[in-house]
Length: 416
Ligand SMILES: [Zn+2]
Image 1 (spheres, protein in one colour):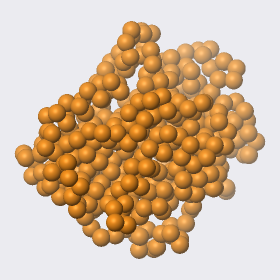
Image 2 (image 1 turned 90 degrees about the vertical axis):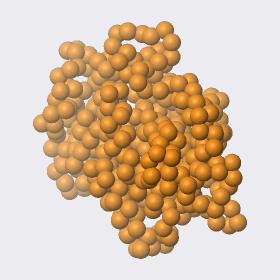
Image 3 (image 1 turned 45 degrees about the vertical axis):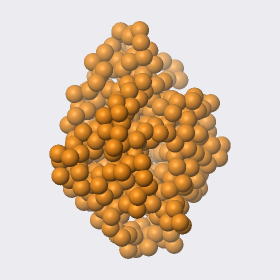
Image 4 (image 1 turned 135 degrees about the vertical axis):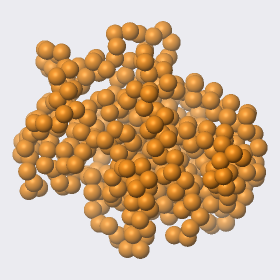
């Protein structure tokens, strides 16, 4: 508390969005609104996130989030100055052309993104074309029964060699489709360029690379059902669980998630209650060989705000009994090196706001894995369009992280 809470007046992107809302469209009673609060510190952002609203983006000290009228009223009652900058339904209507495709596909103009069926085909083709260095399996099934694809890339791929292992996960949050494309780029780059790109070749020869391109295929498919975006975040179990609040370390401890099933940050009835998180957990647990966790580094992709985040999220403390000052310093150094390569902003996760039950906290606390999060393009301060960049942005915004991926793969070979 104690920071300025002036309503936003001049974020250009927000004004553009607000002006795009058709007159009268914001009058639906009970509809969710898009709000901005400026001049926040991390305690303010934690208090706002704790109320169960749907945080969309952060830029500087401005937090942008979707909230229903009751949530907005409660926050105003706490003294926050909320500036309403849009209506969620109106923004969705604006983003979705009034054309419905007959088949399951992204909205017109965004066909460059991969549906689950298309993703599966690309992965199967990559493995068929590169059978010596790539294999396809799954870590289990989603709630609705879709395979949670797992791609392994390494020389002698059929063998479990004594090489540092690295895991990349994408699309825990349904609407963050750009992240699935990021994982797909990693798969294609480390297979297609093997033997021609010296760095790729060296890393494939000396690492075992695991990629899970979509942790939440049910949610992602639902988000584009009928060729119209829905702004969906959670999985499709009941009213949906926020997968990145469902992990089992300090689950629900600290007001960094919601116990209300209707909330966008619902943590689920228990840790690992979601089949998707339980499946990824079981895979990571299975990589303990001879008492030693083989996975040395992990990167989880999200969007948006252009940030590099490291644990812990559940506490403001930089270090504690489960993270020494030296370990915290290593996270900072790696995070800053990654950010220097892609232009993102590096910070400890809780500097943004408190989250609990996140994948990074669990990976580090339970397995000692150097685990970080990227919040991809665009930078914060935008609105709904931040989740749905046009497909022309896929190539530049995934290529932007090529060097960061190499840095993490290299770092996995260093002693922690
Ligand atoms: Zn996310």
